[in-house]
Length: 436
Ligand SMILES: [Fe+2]
Image (tube, rainbow, N blue to C red):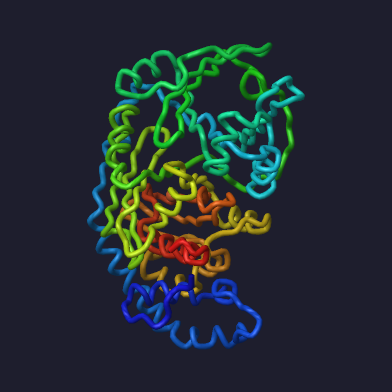
């Protein structure tokens, strides 16, 4: 399905001009007997100036919408009675853990630190543990065709299963969240090997994603009991830790899950977007950002548009709610994105003219605009400072999980001014897949 050309509204022109960017040949296809790529590009180029002028009018309009976002700041200093200390790790259930871990190593610069599988006498599952500074990923697959892992992979594709918190006291945390209404998945239990003992418990969140709580204070092994040290060092790309993780939930479920994170995990609302904040002619989304002391969890739900929203597309291909993207923090996004691009990571396309208005929109920044443009890095400012960010293409076969790289220079937001650009860029890719 191709994007419409010749529409007259600013919104549709905005979408058109994004589609008429530098990769127009690839986006619109080129069958034998078609016009040559040059012939295809030429008419678009003649309207690009007009299109991008309209694009920036849209950003100005978008800015007035951003003013309506409600900030709730007290959450940053609120109590943390559950003693959530940090994100211990994020576990993905995948079809082929060896190849998934190779991808995160070679493309994103994670080093392998531990392994379990047949060689460690695990007859059911295999896991590869990857770490870069304070960010730990676990890729897990199953040997058993009828296992829960295999069934989930068949249903959802490779996907995040567990966002695991390190806590001081698993029993206390688990008892409290269950008292507050959490659905237990695994009661507190010990895992042991020759390196010591780990206490762990698990509760359900949206979809079939879970949160585990883990206490490793009495453990001295390479990762968790059952894992052996298996180091494969990779040159890092500057990823420091997880910044935030975004969940997509179904129509009308955002409030429910925002309330769940508030009532059960003690998070508070940090930002809110509504469908009139983030929308295009085609589709829209609504988002609430829940802020805890260790992480922020934005939650999206689809909003009504003329066509299927990108959140709805995710829900269709994921067969239900799940983690939409993981944002990874860097202190040098130019270095990180350059390295990732060298490693073959594919990012969303950012039109070159995006950068013409950056000085007016965000004012003085430390970076050279041409360096941002060369790498396609986005920039946005709020009253606290600015941030730089860029989003990968989906890292799975399905249009589901993607990765965000983010650098913060004062800003605690999520790039609201870029949200529209992201939204439309994802929609453009969605149109290429015939799902818009
Ligand atoms: Fe994000």
